[in-house]
Length: 463
Ligand code: GDP
Image (cartoon, rainbow, N blue to C red):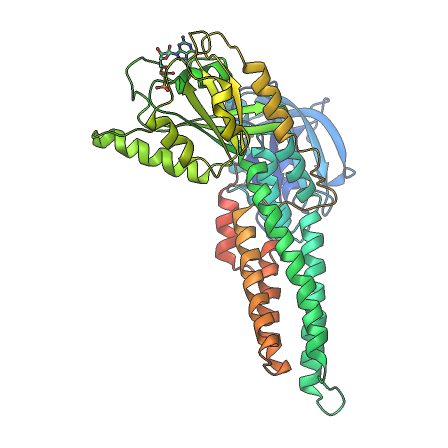
């Protein structure tokens, strides 16, 4: 597929930096930039005559000969460029005014402004990358932690594409065998094929189940570990959040119930991202607005990967405290005996039954910072994800891709049921074909144009 229009956009951040890059891509990109580019001897240069992958120093001037900027121009001829088209990157001085002036000059000369994600879309439509790689470009840019970045980069290098292609190829062999037998029943018999098919389905189901299981980790990699802070009002949840973030984000007051809604913050522990959610204090109340917050808190606990239960150790363990600990009993976490700087009424020994479960009990003081280092060390140890090997294993983090895996698993289940209930072999190909198509969606082999448009619209400008 070829695009005859040449597109351009500012590829760097809109904030002022020392340099900015304007990317121009398309059949006539060299010619368009040639119209405005002059070398150090003030000669207008035809960039079409220059070698590919070379850098040229010079000036950008408008039609009246006015100087706009001193620049470096990088030339990349198709297909060895990001978009797989002829591409020119103009490195100009940072500053949105200069960038826009150069971009406007290109537009006056006939270049069209690129839509968000259009450069990556062209790379995909030219077949330089598959859809999983294209989506990972956005993830690389939006990575919030080292592990998220490593995972997105490995997807960008094509590990998802390779795995999915391998699975599709396995399915294709079966589809072809079945089709061939249907076309030529005299020479090709499907007798006994069901047991072989059953083995293939076993293997495929295992592979897809493994990818789906890893995709749960994928969410954690992408969004961080959902860590919910719970406790009844006034135990020090907001103070704890401020203490661990070392800044005053949450409002701290001594009026119970001041954190009416949930508050979210992000925190790096080592290489791991924690998505910290401070909830409204859970307790029994008639206040309708407060109750909305409490219900939200309970919902957050249900969806949490980890909980930080806070108790006021200067006060005795109440019904509300026990109710809260019960709400969170299925989620691993820590119990912080906060306000340890005051006289302690709740002692760690009293919390033995929780310590034996999935919670670690720690003495803490949000006021003095006692216990903070131990807590951070514990979290680091717990969440240290060294065992994740992005080169060998695949962690799908993208919701669309995960849904395609769920659909694949569904088709394989139906196929398994069909085999077990003895449906004729020639009917296997329907489910096989569905599984093949669903997997194809991940790498963009079977997605409709409108979905492709939607995916690329979420990209930033210039990418
Ligand atoms: P929340 O309602 O659970 O968010 O509780 P806050 O963080 O708003 O704290 C309630 C009150 O307890 C405030 O007056 C805090 O200053 C106080 N507080 C919180 N943590 C500690 C602590 O470790 N020691 C002491 N002495 N007071 C604390």
